[in-house]
Amino acid sequence: MTAVTRSPGPTTSVDVAEAVRAVRASSRRRQLLDAAVTVMGRTGFHQMSMQALADEAQVSVGLFYKYFGSKEDILLAAIVDILEAFRDQLQPAMDLAGDDPVLQLMAGFRRYASIVDENRDAVVLTYRESRTLDAAGRDRIKELEVETSAPMRSVITAGMADGLMNEVDADLVVFDLMMLAHGWALKHWHFAPGYELDSYVAAQLRFALPTLLVPDKLDEYLTQI
Amino acid sequence: MTAVTRSPGPTTSVDVAEAVRAVRASSRRRQLLDAAVTVMGRTGFHQMSMQALADEAQVSVGLFYKYFGSKEDILLAAIVDILEAFRDQLQPAMDLAGDDPVLQLMAGFRRYASIVDENRDAVVLTYRESRTLDAAGRDRIKELEVETSAPMRSVITAGMADGLMNEVDADLVVFDLMMLAHGWALKHWHFAPGYELDSYVAAQLRFALPTLLVPDKLDEYLTQI
DNA sequence: AAGGAGTGAATGTACGTTCACTCATCATGA
DNA sequence: TCATGATGAGTGAACGTACATTCACTCCTT
View (tube, each protein chain N blue to C red):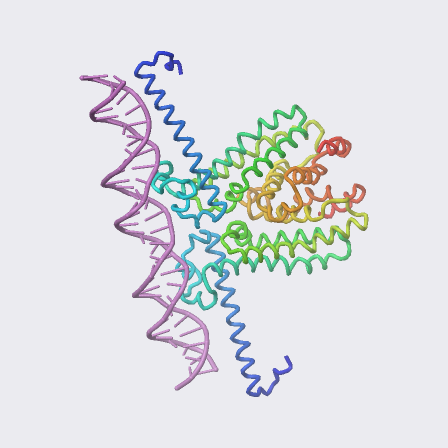
């Protein structure tokens, strides 16, 4: 803001102090959330006592209540946090892939899967604990999931318009792709021995692309996986 | 057993009484399990109090402890129950489809999805509450899931050997198919407005088959969906 | 010395589990 | 045919515990 200058007046120094406080607060919040995701990944939301949570974060129980209204608030925040990561990181990653809808879709799926990989506990959490939330929280989650699906859906629509892709149900395909990416977290116990993230992504792309691409374009893209 | 005759001796009548008791017990057990799945579908395992469970089943709290060792036992029983349904019903349904591996696979997927449909609450339960169980329970579940996947995997292997299907990673494809079927329960809030079970199954088969089938056989089977 | 970050023992409550009890059923002997 | 006693299914109030939440307090930082 222009109010921040080299010779701080009284108003400005209040702003700065407040900004510093806000930064500190939000990094604390992040720390507490990370601890929560870790413990919930280990034991589940209901099994997690506030004491265990405090121990993991190396703070006191009471501090959590300065940052979150209740235990359930922590859960909602953790879930919303991961879903916002999907929503916010997908479009940029796809933009980097250029103009080709197929390459954009591949980049989107790859990025989506790598976010899953980096947040396996949190992804599993969204499946495990959604129903624990109240109706408002659940609606929030559904809304975020639909928002997240938008970039991939529109790129499929574009691909069909360009004659690169077959006529498919774009909405179904996108949700399928998201579920297959979630599978990396949900069925990690099954896939992890045989796959790395990269090879999992490649295998799923080889699974999904033949349906999507018109026959004479297929090989061209399959070789790029 | 040959001991059961028209002129019941003492031993026989004991057997009969015991058999009657066993039948009654197992139907009670089923009733209690059904009530449990209903309540857990509504509120989740942890939110479900034993009192709420007893109310739903219209019995007393104490009775549950005659049939299950603990609350967690009920959860395990409910999950194992649905997974055994998958395991036991899949192969017979596929056998009915004749010798063609592709038709067998289609029949298997269709049956799998319809079991999902009939047990949506229970399927969601397997995702939500698996981690609630102890290690032994979780291992039991993983084992059942792998067993369930066997018939579809072997039919894909057969299809590849017959030259009907492309060379694919059979294990990955089967788990994908199972996840997509689970999607009918997990993402029912999203799909139910636009799909019936039948159209969902048809759409997913149209999604999966192009990858699986060799090009010159594809149309032949797609028209049969 | 003021303000806010951080603490953790105390509180109230919700709930899983138990167990002493009731009641229905039914084989047996009179 | 009827009384009798044994068996075990079914009950639900009472118990103990675990744990989310609070709040009066301390201790830095500026």
